[in-house]
Image 1 (cartoon, rainbow, N blue to C red):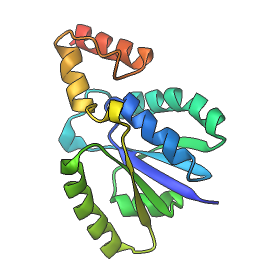
Image 2 (image 1 turned 90 degrees about the vertical axis):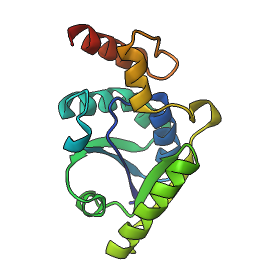
Image 3 (image 1 turned 45 degrees about the vertical axis):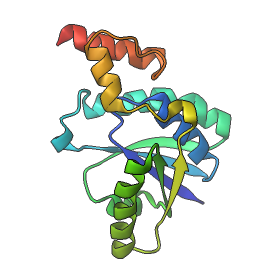
Image 4 (image 1 turned 180 degrees about the vertical axis):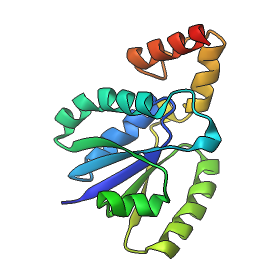
Length: 165
């Protein structure tokens, strides 16, 4: 069984993430969405909320692609998470040259830790290249319309979070 790991914070999950998940799912039999517990980033949504959003957003994708897609929280090294879930492949999305420079360093470090786990980069589709969770949160915080960037359910979650906060 080919297992892929697509890691990220997903705070929140965007159309850009969904694009990479859909395309990544076509490369593997099981796609694990590694939800990082990165405390340094101070996520807007709790781990449980992010996992629930991913599960909701990916349930139809799993049916559509025929690939099992599961969310898996992790707080250890990415390469250790890959081992934990049995992934032979790490899938990363690229939006711009700046992403590539960071990802290039990460691949080098991960290969030094375990060269049996391969990394594959998928370029975001042009219409999704500007989408970043950080920017989506800022737009929502300032009352802007994020419906071009996230699903209606995620849009509602963002609106509710900023009304409450």
